[in-house]
Image 1 (cartoon, rainbow, N blue to C red):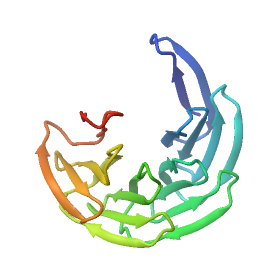
Image 2: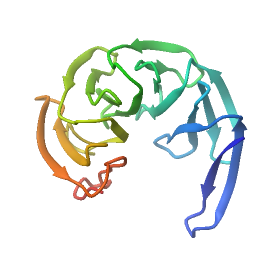
Image 3: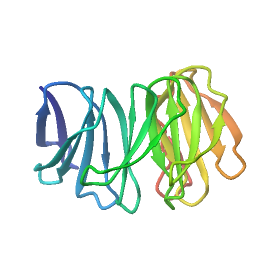
Image 4: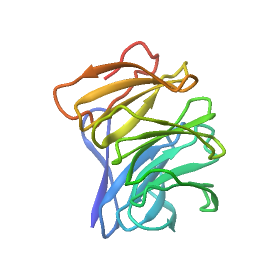
Length: 201
């Protein structure tokens, strides 16, 4: 079985969660840090409490590669192998189906104000959606698959993306423009703004 390992801040192992016979493809904490969402290669969405209890498990489709909580915790977004994005309530009720990507949706992120959803895919494109699921723009620039994360600036309508083309890029959601490109040493699978927005990694 595949395992999710929790860790204490001193580096010692904490709880170990194991409920899937297949790989976990994505995990995401809610804003309060008391619930963990996980998605699996066999198309399940699991919700765990911070004390290691499995609260709910839903079969949501084929291979599911990414998951993100809406900041107000009223919805989750999941990205699948077929390029679709699905919005769900925390009790597993479907809200919307977003279509547009041509390959696996590898990363999803809600903006801090819950007004936008940005998604990236193996099709090398970023798609920008409203919170209701209306597609606003298709952003092109990466030459290869998008990485595992999109990171929104905490105070601006801007977000970072990274990809297998070894670049990190900053985008503006309002103008749908690319603001800058940074060449990195390896493929940019993980990018993140600091909580105050002054640094990025």
